[in-house]
Image (cartoon, rainbow, N blue to C red):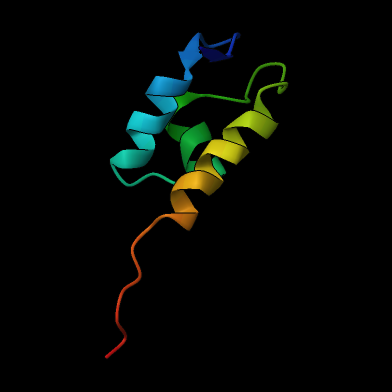
Length: 62
């Protein structure tokens, strides 16, 4: 489904970018250009980014 109509970015593209290690809203905006036009997609982009940041594996500080 299209998330960013201005840049024609789908949820699949956003998720693929997150799986490659980009999981912050600002990084997604920089890489894909989402939420840089009208901004209406910002909330959805943030939700997807949060999904990936919450599921990121914990690193032992051992």
